[in-house]
Image (cartoon, rainbow, N blue to C red; front, side, top):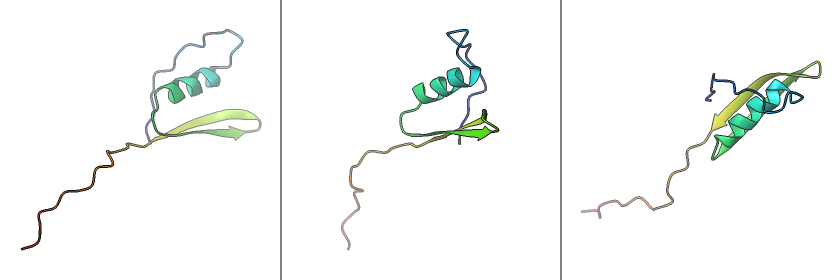
Length: 65
């Protein structure tokens, strides 16, 4: 799991701070998951899991002797 500690300022004063954080996490992600944890109707935690995709080329192995 990766997380960025720099919190961007909300672009709209009416926009909640957590929404700006979620947007920045999603925009910086190619493959993965952004998960929100909610307690008593409030977003209390944002988790980001990033996947690294490798090329689909087959592994070349030397022929058996």
